[in-house]
Amino acid sequence: MSHSAAATAASFAKTALRPTTTSEHWTNALRFRTTNDTFTSELPGDPEVSRPPYQMQADSEGKVDVPQAKFRASRTVRGALWSWAMPMEHEDPRLVSVSESGAALIGLTKDVFSRDMRAAAEIWSGNVRMPGSHPWAHCYGGHQFGIWADQLGDGRAISLGEVDGVCGQEGSGGRWEIQLKGAGRTPYSRFGDGYAVRRSSIREYLAAEHLHALDIPTTRSLALVFTERLVEREETELGAIVTRLAPSWIRFGSFELPASRSDYRLVQQLADFVIRHHYPEIAAQRGNNRYAALLREVSRRTALMVARWQAYGFCHGVMNTDNMSVLGLTIDYGPFAFLDAYDPGFICNHSDTGGRYAFNEQPRVALWNLMRLANPLSALINGEDFTAAASESSPEDHGQRRELEPETIEAITEILNEFGTRYKQEYARIMRRRFGLFAAEEAQDLSAVVQPFLDLLERAKTDYTFAMRSLCDAPLMAAEVLSSGDGRGQLGKLVDSLIARSLAFSCTADSSDWKAQAVEYFRNVYLPRLARDMGADAQGQADEVSKKMRAVNPKYVLRNWVAQDIIERAEKGDEAVVDRALELLTKLAFVDTLPGHLADLEKYAGPVPKWGEGLQCSCSS
Image (cartoon, rainbow, N blue to C red):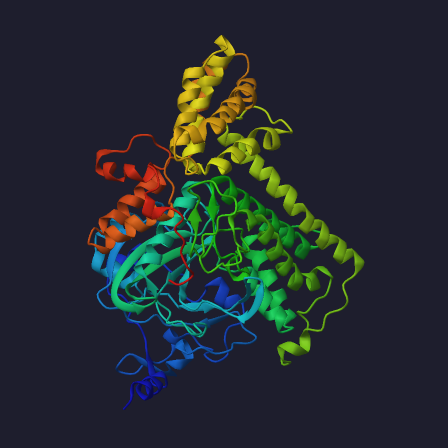
């Protein structure tokens, strides 16, 4: 039998269920919510497989009488927001790293994982199932690079279920949806294989926890597992699986897909679900348009998220609407990057030939994406109720929309127009803190203090993270200038250090004009503003302000070259470097001196090596 014939026959064979773990240690440590996962119990699922596979009668070989193709072959799914899914079996899974803070969100400790690492690897690779877990994959669409792509969905992410959050932890009182990325094909895999490689998995695992440490809204990481599976990308690579957490994985595209099919009953069901479980403050409102309130809150959270991206030099790289969370979280880490040299036009995704998702385009794209979300919600904001449509009718029969009322258009326009104001306010708030301006706001801080400094960095191609960290020494200089009128020695050293971390100058003579302008900026603009903010007791306040600045200006960020160095070290056998890098990027990103066991990672705060300048990644992972 040919390979293709064998594959076709296998797709129609019965489906083998993943065995349930026999580890009492794990069954006592974590409880899934059995069949009461809010997403699958309250929202319509794929009618092709209507019952959870683990509630079906299995034969003596642990197989159910449902063809594998129902779980793993790509197909169009209508009238549904999810499909049951089945992780593939992976050869020799190995637990590489666990996020301590991610585990705490769901009541686990690292000790729970280390006590039985083999069992942990089997569970978090998807090889075995936890009791109560009924895996599924999300169905959604999206605009990719500005073009409608129709049905997309979770092509290599499989949600294992929902667990309750732990009181006292972030999101306490809510639920966390646990998801495996790279566990195998689903009905939404299209031309993909459903797997992930170690390279991209290391990047996503570290990035989510690092952004959380930077106070940027994000999904979270729980565990990283390596497998021996060979995965074909540009070249053959070894596989990996990331376990990730979010209160919800619902995206803008989750609304777009049913709207594109005129299934507004499904749009309304999803909107009601999101409000009920994720925006209870909207559900409690009386007399207001709840769907307009939903759009406003999603817009607000998105503005805050993108403002923090811009403040910390984070470039997402693939801001398609299927990669935009309705909770305002950074999701789906692909070809992301942090700025090295400050370059507003930096493009981190080498597939983005037109620069649509360049660093300085991110706020504009976020608003464009919100306009796409506003389209399906507009019918609901317009006062139309699709829940009363006959249940036996097809989705298209209950999707006729009325023309939008002038009041609806006005309300949506007002909400979208608020985005720019909210974004600017949040960006200004963060940048004031990063510049040490904690006491009082001045209307011209962005235009008169922040932007001129960024213009200097852009001209010199100065390392952005290093430059912002260097400002932490400015309070002492400001106090000295205020008290003695001098401070030239310290200021000269600071400016020289910026020149040393700039790419635009090949010799001292090249930088002389820039140095003069930088000194003038510090002496006449920034230091006087900083001294004014510290007040009459600037000398006494300087140390405290400097300390506060060090808490918001990281010394270490997950630059592309840093991620690549970690990946290469792991590939050469030093897999422990992933755990150590996680410690650096979460607990120690803001410290000046590292403990001895991380001393070899101090280079990650140093100059970008020549091989690492301008590194780009692709969407292939």
